[in-house]
Image (cartoon, rainbow, N blue to C red):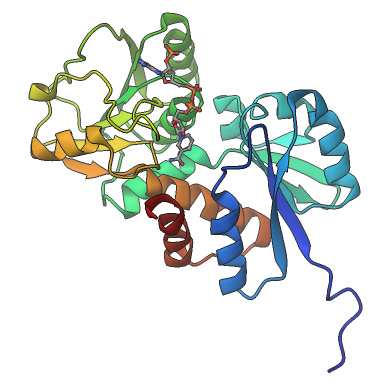
Length: 288
Ligand code: NDP
């Protein structure tokens, strides 16, 4: 069979991080590329903080179509990009870079992935809702900015470290229509009765510490609340199990991980990936 020149060359994307060996995103993206019949490869690349500048130069030279950034590069990468999407600039971090001609454009798909999971998996429209985030790190920043931009009316940031919480609240109040407030996290947090959505945006409960739960007064959790967890591994966290036992609806962190990857796939390829294929690929990694 005749072959067009260049058609054997795979398009390249991947992830820069340190550590990177356990990152499951490649399995999910490669499954989606195969299902879509695309000759694309997703490479897990160990890049130290000191080597990020050279790695970005290499990415440009090898004409990668894009890259994901994980620890420790999500903030540091900003200075090497030609453009940053407005929401990623507000979040102050980039987890996905796409190449458009010779320009590298920074995006953040974490919060958008969470928003899509809330809308499509939990079937809740965040518009007009009161949302409480436990944590003020990178994940909380991404999620709270996107939900505020999607019309959430009130956002409470509950965090152990005040400076981080205050900073996020200032960002939300200055740049989004939502009204945001900070609550210092001391002891078991009592969820206000008017809250619609409660989100664990901390790393508490992540494998291997699967018995750990964020300190929340569970007597204040009830059937009116949607309780979400950012932890994708294991998807059914001890926190979600406790919330479900109180009659609350729950949403796990696997959906967010799938959708943030699906949004990156679309940014890179211009195509919608198969969500079931991506989800099944991740479930195999996390549940076996
Ligand atoms: P960061 O390190 O940036 O932030 C961690 C946050 O958790 C901080 O607010 C920190 O509080 C808080 N925290 C950690 N331990 C405790 C504790 N014992 N008690 C109270 N607060 C605590 O991490 P990220 O925001 O980047 O990531 C958080 C989690 O989100 C990770 O587990 C990550 O795997 C997950 N994640 C999931 C995604 C998905 O798609 N499902 C996407 C991105 C992240 P303080 O400021 O006081 O230190």
